[in-house]
Length: 326
Image (tube, rainbow, N blue to C red; front, top):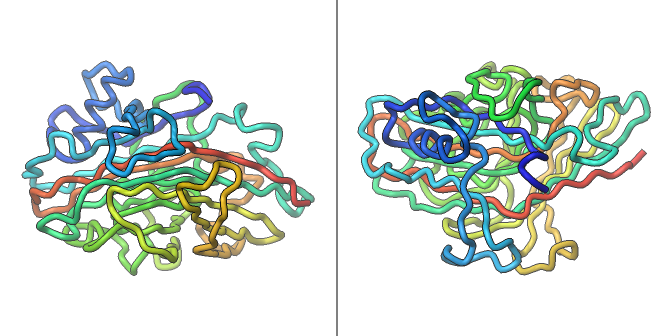
């Protein structure tokens, strides 16, 4: 696939933010086509190319280059008085996913098309001297918010798409993460020492309220931690299947060994979530404003100020499959 097969949207950045995750996003926005005169948050989701062989524990089955968000860029001193964050969403264009994508009719109408998203993901960094004050995530997304018509590289603070400082994203999400996410761990508004985890990355599933990812009402979002042990500076192969049924979706999460041949993996089930049709975070299949697939990533630095570096995120070999299970 090429850049033209994807749509990009990102939260705003600002020229005055010269530390933390926003600085990387601002500078990368210039490199990827932004004019460098404003916020340009919609260009950074293209990420930057990093030579796989240049990484510790490189991905042997990956391409020559992976995509990366080096959030630690110019972040040696996060001395601002405010919490900094940035996130981006990448959707597969509606004409680039085959004849069964996107699904626009409901199971009640007899349409049962399952989605399967797969990718290699990685987070580099360390917990640092102030555990919990920094966090990043990267992972796959299904049934995410449809982007505005008329162009790519949009930027917005619209809660329909994401809530940056709550590490919340539209759709169903499976991510390797060092963030605390809205609706996970009982935390409704991650901030300060609750911005990130205090030990090692984890693989998580999360989903926030449809069309209002900032909503903190109890029950409006959900999340769970997947089985398995995860570490910094290490690649993982993840998979999310979204299986429709009348009145509910089942989301299954798998991992596979990174040395498995692509297409012949041995997948291990690490999490199952059933989302009932009455839940605030359920996305109806016939809702044409919430029917995309793709991937997302982001990073937050909590307040008070911390000298710890934001964690860098990487992705490679993103794949998408559909299957008619009618």
